[in-house]
Picture (cartoon, rainbow, N blue to C red):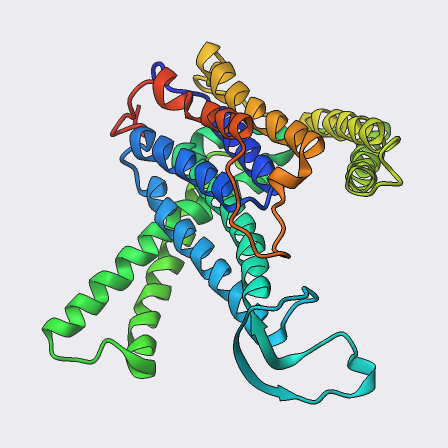
Amino acid sequence: MGDSVHPGAWWLWALSLGIAATRTTNPLLLALLIAVSAYVVAVRRPDAPWARSYGAFLKLGLAVLLIRLVFAVVFGAPVPGTHTLLTLPEVPLPDWAQGIRLGGEVTAEVLLRALYDGLKLAALLICVGAANALASPSRLLKSLPGALYEMGVAVVVALTFAPSLVADVRRLRAARRLRGRPDKGVRGLLQVGLPVLEGALERSVALAAAMDSRGYGRTAAVPPAVRRTTAALTLGGLLGVCAGTYGLLTAEGGTYGLPVLLAGVGAALAGLWLGGRRSPRTRYRPDPWGARAWLVSGSGAAVAASLVLAASADPAALHPGVVPLTAPSLPVWPAAAALLGLLPAFVTPPPENFEESS
């Protein structure tokens, strides 16, 4: 592990880039954010099975973008446009379905608006994929609060066994092809799926026995008053987070949104800290939060804060219009701020090939 960066710092960096992506629909800025995350992943991704998921998130983002374009073509959008690209047969709908359209004219303005919205969601997914490719799930598990430890173990086990399932499917399909048996279609899927499920069941039983022998799942005795306080703080904190987030997203709740959000986060963290007393466990070689972790998380926070300020100061540059149909321009200082996300590529150590075993 050595001088490697805390996995929580990678998640904060990636989520900050995702927050920045949600503040703009400018395709040039969104493409720049995607390029920043891709470059950092390319130079700092370790050679581990869990780190190969970035390509899957890229494909998922592309699929989301294509689906958004297809929906725009089929259902249209309330965007006035004069540049008609094609006209589809329109399906008449009843009166109660007013505002919904099936078919009809497909304009360039509608497709461009759909492209902007789909690219924003794709950029958010790709940023989450960058966190999955850079942060070790097992090391992240050690940093979770005690109250979330059991849930974190379930997630890490699922992420760890997913590559094994893919490898089993490839191995069985290759074996069937060598024997001249079909490996595609419903029949091939059934005959490959059963051995894969059998192997997964055997691994799960062995894992359960190993966890049981190590005392996994034991809880400490906690007074009833502490349990009730924990439940009240956690539930109240989550409700405060929801109310504060809603206030920040609406114009009417802009005054109370941030205080309620901060109070909810504080109450939820206090509830998680108290809940961790029920799960006694020790930390073996905990990950330190050093200067590199501050630089990584701080660079992402700087990008998010800059885009939030830019969205308030110059909304037209970060949300280009499609009526009239004009090409988007790249705002200079938001683009320069997005480049701050490249800092982890230069301040973090090279990836370790055997990070999990160190």
